Image (cartoon, rainbow over the protein chains, first blue to last red):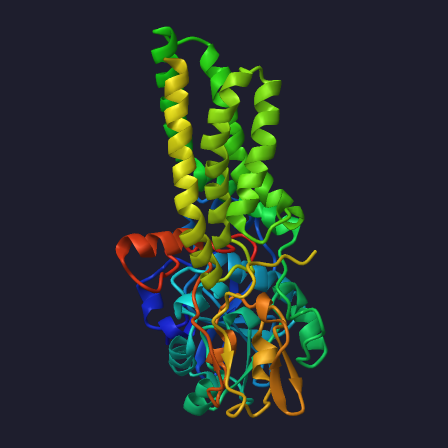
Length: 353
Length: 100
């Protein structure tokens, strides 16, 4: 008899895969075989992993094995919570299940969070139907109800799941922290639990990744600044530090300040808001740093568009921007920004000669 | 504080003749775009739509349609460069840290 533990979808594999993560604490016997029981506490390792992926390190390989897991001591009448196999997502769910008996059905989303995976279709009808059948869910539970995160809805057609498996999909709250209350209320979603927000805390958590993604501008800026200084003085001096400050301001404006100030910026357009922010902070910081006043016009042609472009990329991380909106901004705004940058570069070169 | 994106851009469309008033759209929408009134869905806050596609996907009678996609500049630019019409989110960057 095979007593080794692995998610139900991978039984048989578990003989050859000795790896067992520390968050599996035991197993529970069901009519569909042994199901691993998970811990609802995070270890130091889990926490370090979360910090690591938020810094963008190994973010695409942070996954748990898909399949069925147990929290507490669930039985045939316990709720089934469906989630993605991005470990950060899985951890966010399991920490909320302390003292709760539930089944967790982990779909194979290739290590991507629920919302993004739903958009791609990997957190989707087909994968859900397949996993229900693979793990033999109809033999594990007596009821026919699945609780899905609401943000999985772009990928899952509830009516198709029901037709194909007999399981009824209930969309639960957006945020895993509301799961205990939702379950305690008999699977009733309270007002507010359905809305997606984008509070400062979430925006701050995204800043490291924004910095990393926009960092590509820094070496380009450095080369430009050093080259200009060399053309001007025929040597490299400490002046380049001062020269670099407006550029650094443009970079940090788009990848830090913009994220913090987002709700208070006056326009709806990200490009306009980013540009305006650049127009406000770049001259202020430059003058304070002792950059010559005569260089401001060229810097203001060149750099606020860069702030705008970096800020525009934040649309990928926000929770409310639409594809049609991004397309419109791109078509209308990008040509103007490029023109402005080129004009600013030409003016800079003209001025130092 | 409510953050809003561009006005009058969403491709969301509701064919009221097909709507059965089941309320699924109102349930799955993360921005409360819909309201159910007199056994029919009403688009109450059109400009809050982010075109995620949850409503159309879960509309059994097929009354809702939207060109769903990711509102992500990097993905749209990459899509333009590669010449694909509907860009796919390539980095999974969206909400990496905040959406569990």
